[in-house]
Length: 510
Image (tube, rainbow, N blue to C red):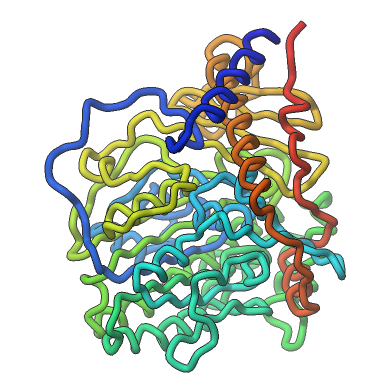
C-alpha cells in the first residue's frame, strides 16, 4: 500500500509541476460526459443576490424532503428555481467554508480559518493572489454590497474585499455584534430599494447566523416547534437565553458546558429549537422577497441561496459542527435564474460550494480568475445531473487535528492526521454514515482513499506556490469581534494549519 500511495503522490506532484497555464481541478472527476448540449445559458449584466443561511443542513428544508414545515417560503421559491440535491461544503466552519465559496479554493489553499475568542489572537487575512468573487464582480462594473452577520465572517479576514464599504448609497455592513435575521433583512432592503436607480448591475451578499446555536427565535416559533418538554437542561437554559431581558447571548456558553449531561429529551429539544430558528428565518426571507417583487427585482436577478455547513445533534456523538460527516457538510443549494429559467429542475449528483463561483462566472459571461478550482454547474442545470464530481472537504481549524474527506456516489473516505487513519463508508447503503467505518484504503474504498491523497498533495502544492508570492497577513481582532465569536461558542485557541501536516501524517501499510 505504501508504494501505491507514494506513486499517487508523485503523479499528483508531477501534474502540478508540469501544468504550466493549465489549472488542475481541486478534486478529480470519475468520468466526463460526451459534451455540452447546444444552446448557451447566460445572463450577462443580471443582478446577483447571494444569501447564506449559516448552519442550515439540507435535510431540514422541505424542498430536500423534510416534512415538518420549516421552510414553506424556500419550498415555494424552489418551484421556479434549480435544486442541487447533493451539494457539499468544503468545511464545517464558517470562515473556511465562506472563503471557499468566495475563492473557489479548498481551505488549505486559501488559508483562512475560524478565529477564536481568546483576546489578542490574530487571524489570517486572505492573500491578494487569491481573488474573490466580490473583487471579480467589482472589476466587471458591479455595485457590491454585503450585509453579513459578523462572528467568523468579518472584514479582517478579507471578506470585505470587493465591497463598497460604508457609504450612504451602499451600506455594506459586517456586523461586529451578532444581528437578528430581521436586522439583516431590513439592512438588505435599504440597499435593494436603491438598485432601480443604479446605472450598473448590483451584487448583494446577505448572511445570517439565526440558525446557528443557541437557535434563537421569537416565542411564537418556539411554541410551535419547541414547546416545553421533559428537557431538564436545555429547556431552562434556552428560556433564560431567549426570554429574559438583558441576558447576554454569551450565556450560551452555559448550554455547551453541560452537553455531557444531555438526555435524549435535551437532544430533541435542541433539534426543535433549531427547527424554530429555521422557520423564523424562512418567514423573514418571505418578507424580503415580497418587497423585492414589488420593486420588480426578482426576474432580472440570479438568486443563490445556500449554507456554509450543517449541524449535528448527536448523530456522531457530538453537537454543533466540528466533524466531517453528512449532517455537517450536506447543504442546500438553490439557484433561481432570471425569469425562472429551468425552474423546477432538480440536479442530481454531487457538487461542492467551490463550484458556485465558476458557475456564476459562466452565467454572467465574466472571465473568472485562473485560481478557481471548482467546476461550472451550468451544464448540469441543462442536463439535470452533475458528472462524476467528488467533493473534498477539510477541517483545518485546529493545528493539531487536521481532517479531510472525499465523497463519491458510492464511497466516503475520511483522513484523520492525528490518528493516522483513513476510514470508509458505503454511501449507497449508508448515506448518513451511521454504520461503523471500514478501512478507507481497502476494497471498494481504495481508489477513493488514494484520490483523496492526490487531492491533498495538489492542494498543498498550490498553497505552497501561492504562498511563495503572497502568504497573506495576520491581523488582530477588536474586542467586539472577539465577544461575538464567544457568543457563537468559539472559545478555544485555534491556529492556521502548518504547511505539510496532512501529507506528513498520511497512513501507510507495511
